[in-house]
Length: 532
Image (cartoon, rainbow, N blue to C red; front, side, top):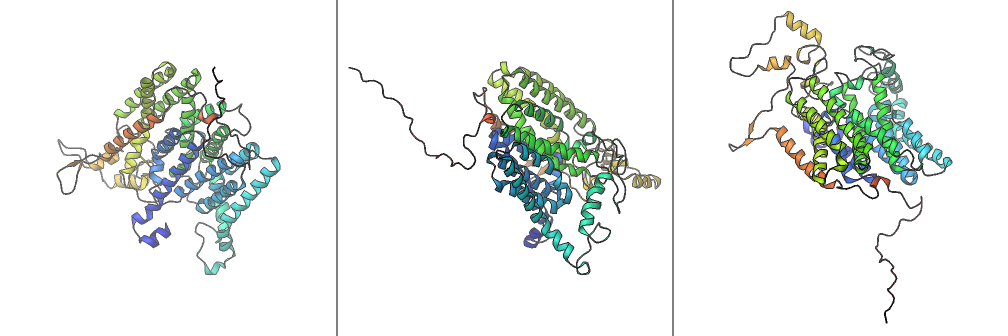
């Protein structure tokens, strides 16, 4: 961002254009990683889920380092999976470099996915055991160099001639890293913090919300990230079970374990950390969820001839529709008709997916399309609301205001007060007699009453400059674009089960062996016997 401002000057556009580029790069890395082992349709589904997650739409257009962290974590998983293909050291070294740079962006949060990825490579890599540990050591060295050079400069530079390390107690970056920004976030004992977190055992309440296994689904965080989280967990279990008996170096299983373990580790720490926690931290989970959805859905679709694959797809769709119904119910005044539509479409799509092996091509594609619509309608609506709403301040949230949670809008709202206002400020306004004015008869409700009720502002109808042509609202244009994208994606789906699924492909070359020539050769056939 600093480089962008130096080149383009200080402006909102110059600050936010790097964030948009990070979103594009993250989507590209996700597509490349998923398509490499599965299919182009899986990559497209992955990018769609990534783009339609509300917290991703929020943080990839906001001045915050979490977007860079999500990009670097995605690059790390991609490099590890590339190293799993042929055991090349360079990809594992690049993974260490990505983790080191992620440490410079948000310190110890970058290390959350290190344990599962290191175990994954140590167990399933296609090289001897001794070489695996040597490669992991080189990766760790690359991580220390790429992330430690700046730390060494700061710590070795005289404290009297450099800026003070903000947030630390004794002007030390290491103390800040392992204290306030490190273990303090886990146990809640943050020296200099404005407040503690929830109970250590789970289920406790505090300044930063309740902790526990259901934290990602509660009223404050659920609408940010959890729309497709149940579906990701279902397809993760199905993918691991389907590939469990494959050979040790199977890449499809490695992909499910890499993305799935990263999701479980990060979500587990977020759920039980008792220190400072904000809703937008969950943007780190978006790439993992998107990759699991793309891989799992396509694998189950290719295996749909088996009854359990269709049943799992149906369970995934109906669980997602039910959870979307619950999340949309937390903002009852925002598109109230969408709740029933999502639930009905999800149930009908689930019935169709149960019978997908007996349906023709058109009906099967209709069931799949209806399932995608039911699963993505809720996050799409919240994403469009996020894109149409300006955000200010340091703590922001995506989507409209929800009951019992923090609302959207400029600054993200607050906890417990009217319209997302902090309780103390709301109480002061009531004591001063500042109440909303009633709306005029025959007109819409006033803006103040809509804010107090947590309702989203209706999209205005704009007229193009220089003409009397009426411009459609953003959500209508986006829905048309989504419909066109689905028409393109539907052509990529196979109409009948393949004889050999793309994710079952095996590598015929050994590590270090030359690749076969791309030049085609004519098959050698025996000539027919001459007739007399």
